[in-house]
Figure 1 (cartoon, rainbow, N blue to C red):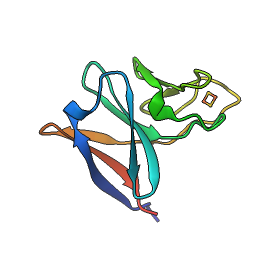
Figure 2 (tube, rainbow, N blue to C red):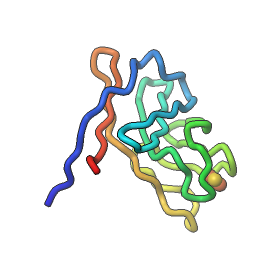
Figure 3 (cartoon, rainbow, N blue to C red):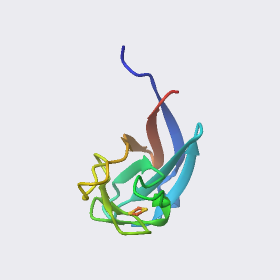
Length: 108
Ligand code: FES
């Protein structure tokens, strides 16, 4: 059976700083959301799987989200980690429409 998802409005694109993260709570799910210089938006789990670093306090380099604690990197599109010993994180589809940012997350 396919997982059910919901699409949620987060904020306006202008409310996301370039290269820095912002934390959101979507239905009890902590998200870290980033905006690239090119206007692409990435939404991933808010907690690093290494030692629970707050990813929203990290930064975006290219399409890589850098954890603020030990600088492990996560792909903003897939959530894959650059360290073999650490599993990846969940990455969520985003969309910008008329200057508004939406994210699609699973429904619990
Ligand atoms: S807590 Fe994120 S890299 Fe260590």
